[in-house]
Amino acid sequence: MRITRIEAVPYSIPYRKPLRFASGEVHEAAHVLVRVHTGDGVVGVADAPPRPFTYGETQPSVVAAVCTLFEPALIGLGLLEREKMHARMNRTVGNPAARAAVDMAVWDALGRHLGQNVSALLGGFADGMRVSHMLGFDTPERMVEEACRVRAEHGVTTFKVKVGRRPFSLDVAVCRALREELGDGVDLYVDGNRGWTAEESVRALRAMADLDLLFAEELNPADDVLGRRRLVRQSPVPVVADESATRPGEVTRELLGGSADAISIKTARTGFTGSQRVLFECEGLGVPVIIGNQIDGQLGTACSVVFGAAYEATTRHAGELSNFLDMSDDLLTDPLVISGGRLPVPAGPGLGVAIDEDKLAHYRLDSPTGPTPGARPADRRPGAASPTTA
Image (cartoon, rainbow, N blue to C red):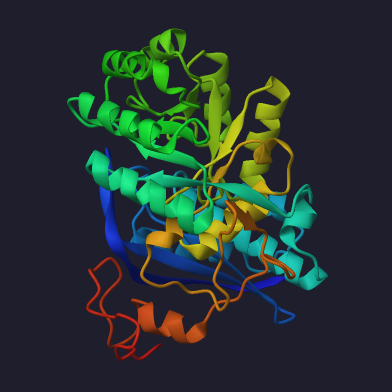
């Protein structure tokens, strides 16, 4: 049960259509697969989705952090020595996605070694979660069309609406169109990705006061502490901290300082170990939580539902578990399936998932004949010739 090697494999899978939001847009899942190898032959896996526009990480930086900083520090440690692991990884500041992926891959390896699902090891509360679908920037007509399609095909009845454009009347019109078309049987909440000022946020929420929004997430800049406090005091709906509360100390600051009413937990950002700490802190303060989305593929989504289904508090609201529906392909041998508005925890030891090695070879970026990490991939659609793997 001791770590002998940690591997970081950059890969890229195109999206069917770009996802657009206030802080940027995404055309491909340019992620890093992290694999933790142990002396008894067990391999744990997890996904690191770099978000340079939010946390400053890139594919090359994630690979470098995992291979040159974390691997040398963790080789030889047992899978149960997680406090030692985090003490050593925490000597490096930043790099949240790289650190989180290593943590979750260790949990996956531990579950596989013990023959137990990680969700059961964490808490085992439920066998799945209700799903929230994220709607990126588009016209009101197209966003309504997408919401109706996802509800009809997958039974989803909770939608997170990306807002933060100027003038804010654009997003008010979208939310109003969604409410009018979908009716009262659907939950709507908004996410501004720091796109508005506090004053614009207050005015926008007042303009949507009759739409029965569930939450408003990170509407104004994360470093505008006083503005967020004013927003919380004036907002007609609970305000969720996301990018402004990325670790336990920041969660404490936001909640006790009056800058947030709820917290978004993202396993791609805090792993399982850090997410536990955030969750328990919120539980102790009586604060609601949401399982958020880091624009995850199916492996990242599996991590989210494994964690979210483990605890009662994280199942009270739908988790953001459907982003992979917009991807043209994925890496898992058995794809995740959303049905009846729910996503089950994958069955089996560890995370309950397996990587399709042929697909990984097809999409990886570090092969001798493939593009360099961080470069835009050539045409590698399903059926195209696979690059030679290392």
